[in-house]
Every structure is written in C-alpha cells, then in structure tokens.
Length: 311
View 1 (cartoon, one colour):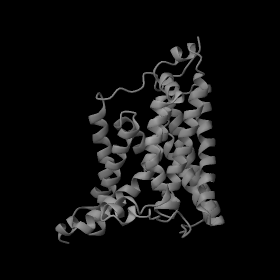
View 2 (cartoon, rainbow, N blue to C red):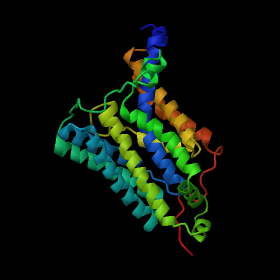
View 3 (cartoon, helix red, strand yellow):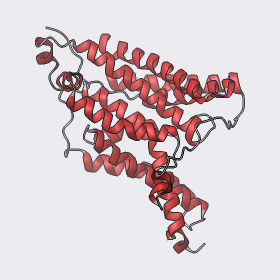
C-alpha cells in the first residue's frame, strides 16, 4: 500500500473518530481510579473490574435486549467489587499493590469462567449502544463526524471529565477526598471520617471501571471474549500518574493512548509495511515511555498506599 493513503483526509478523520470512541473505556476507568488514589488508595484490580463489567453488561444485554439494563447490572457488579476492595484495603489494611493484583486475577478468572459456562462461545449483539447523532452539531463538516456521531457511552465518558473536576475542586466532598489523600490524620481531627471517604471513592472507582468494561462490550465492540481488555486497566492506572491526578490531565492522556490505538488499527487495516507485532505493541511501549517521563515530574497524594490507623 502507498502509505500516503493513510494520510488522506478521509482516513485521518476516521482515525480521529475512532480515537475519540476508543478513549471512553480509558476515561471511565482512569477517572474512577483517580478518585480512589486522591483519597489514598491504589487499586491495581481495575483490569479485573473492567472484565467483570464487560461480561455482565454483555450477558444482560444479550438476554434482555436492553443495553441500559446491561449497564446498570455492570455498575452493580463494579460497586460490589469496589466495596470488596475497600474492605481489604481500608478495613483490613492489606498491602494495596498485592491485594489489587489479587482482585485483578479474580476478575479475570471469574469472567472467563462465566463466559465458558453461560456463553460457551463468542457471540455478537446488535442491541448495544449505537451511534447517536447530536442534532445540528453532527452536521458540522469534519468536526460533526468526529465528535457528535458517537455512542452514548462516549458522550458519558467525556461528560464525566468536567463533572469530576467540579466535584474534586468545587465541592465539600472533593475537599474531603483531597484532604484524606494528603493528610488523613489532619482530616480526621477536623471531623472527616477517613474510612467512609475511602470506601466511597474505592467503591465509586469500581463502578466506573465496570462502566469502562461495558463501554467496550456493549458500545464499542458489541462482543465479549476472554481477556478482551488486554491490559487497558493497567494503562488506566498509568494514565492517573500521567495526568498528575487531575481530570483534564487524565483526559489528555486517554486521548493520546486512544489515538495511538486507533492509528495502529488503521495501519493494520491499510496494510502499512510494518510488522503487526510492533503495531500491537505501540500503546504499551508508549505506556512505559510515559511512566518513565512522568516519574519525578508529578507529586502523588502524600498518603497514597498508606493505611490509616487512628491514633
């Protein structure tokens, strides 16, 4: 193929449109993880929560034909998994990195077991969240196609960013979350219930991670298969660091990764003479480069990964 074809206006618009859509799972998962980390809890089980959310949303949608019921079911499962993570990390004060990996393994294994037991084979649904054209805005040349002809989950994911910013920086709840993540002992002396705040944020993170999985299975792909997240949960955790624990920083990182993902997909479709293995590696190599460049440039919440023991 002539690689200049990849740079044509039509293909570039296609890459940007796909990149916007592919950013939604990263945004849901990373924003949820950001809230947890801002309160002092690191959750490396995001990937497992995404897989369980993806399976639950897909299975319920397949059986009912209603993707909204699938999404609600996924959110309920994500809340339960987030709550379990909070019990282990906050109440039992387990080492957060190790317990998070444990939850990832549980989520991955359970989603595979349920897939083999309840489905048995890969199925495709046609009742997921389809593209919704925003009146008038979708008719804008180029920009309308890129931004305003997306599915509902994409719109929700991008709306979540300013909402998360407002909650974190303009509400009493956001102030409590930031205080607990920086100095839980000082927050406790001021009457803030540290355990309650951490339970809230970790559970909320589980909900958003499950929504990220649902965005994959019933919006972007309309299919479920084993380990379909392929490391996206861990990339979401990395995006929190890349974004400096700020919603709009996370948005920038999510768009960067999703655009790279969209680019490598189009390069494979148009048979650009680059080994497919290298193309598949691109987003993950970028993850490592970003982490190396980010370390030392941003300051994590002071109490991140540190259990709170009331004195």
